[in-house]
Every structure is written in C-alpha cells, then in structure tokens.
Image (cartoon, rainbow, N blue to C red; front, side, top):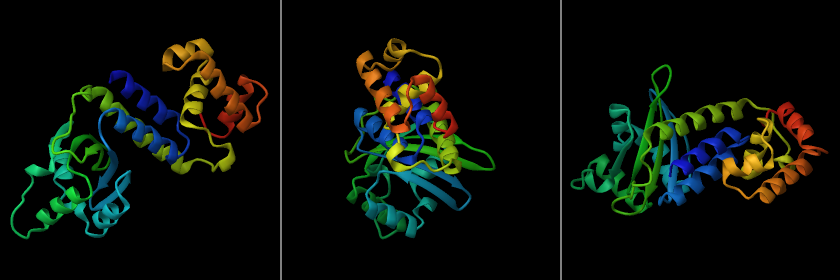
Length: 234
C-alpha cells in the first residue's frame, strides 16, 4: 500500500486537470477495497467538495447543508488525524436530522470508511475520505499516516494550481500515465529509470511518452518537456 500511496501522490502532482485527479483517486480507492472517495474543504460555513459519490447524494448533501452535522466532518475537525468510521455507530432512533442523514447516507452506499483530515490556512480544514457500502470497511491497507497526509496536500495544492492554469485543448490532454512518465522525463529520468520508479514496463513507458509527444506535437522528449512546461503541465 505504501507504493500505491506513493503512486497516488505522483499522479496528483502530475495531473493537469480535475479529471486526472479523479481518475487517480478512483484507482486508489478501488485498489484499497473502497468504492467511493470524497475530497472536502471547509472554511467556516463554506465547503468545497470533489468526489465520486452518487449525484443524488451530492445534491441532498449540499441542499440540506449536511456538512453542519456530518459526523465524519465533525470528527475530522476535532481529531485532526486519520480515523475509520461506520454509519452504524451514528444515532439510529427518532426523527432527528442526524438520523435522516445516517439513513440517507446508507441508502446511497456511504456506510463506512476512513478519513484523513489536514488543517489548512485561515481556519480551513481539508479532508480526504474513502468510503464503502459495507458495514465495516477494511482499512488494513491504509496505514501510512504520513503518506496519507502528503496525498491530501498534493491533491489540495494541485487543485489550486489547476484552477488557475491556462486551459488546454481537450485533444491535447494527457492520460494519467502519460503525465506521470512526462513528469519523470522532466526530472531527467530516462525510460528504464522511469520504469523502475513507476513499476511500468520500460516499453510501455516509451509508449506513453510517444503518445504524449503526438498529442503535444513534439519531435523529441526534450521538446515534449519544453512544450509541457510552456503549458503548465509540469
């Protein structure tokens, strides 16, 4: 799992659009035994969310302002350290708003998971959650707290950079693997070195670089790196 977290961090830092970050998070979630992910940033009553939860649940959550009572958000702000949770521990009786929240979350497949909170600037909190529809999620593969925090920070800052970046034509967008190989090339690594660092076959690394060259209309890898830097892709 240490290698998977490292890969998630690398892919987040190499991403040049939200689609790539979402793809990296989805892959990590599935490989770790989860079904969904949610990145949430809170600052006072304001929230920003970036997730793979069902659209129906996202609408209910935002319209009902559930971040006010969400036990996961509350616990994240209180503890400021990685923790596991299960909706079965939340209040299950009566007609309270919290019970409605619990019942709706379970209905949409958000029943258990693990959350990594990080304190931000100006009273803000960033948190990354991986969720499962199971009664109790298996978190045995998510134990490296330090790398988990690094992943949250990488995603947070990359999203900020992406928001301010120049828009690139869709046909020139790189895939997550192309971007990772490009990032290592920009750091001076050759094909075999990149293969060793990423666990990707050397010939496949070359395939990703060739594909990236075609998309950015570069004749060589050094030219590819230069063009990517000009477009803010690395």
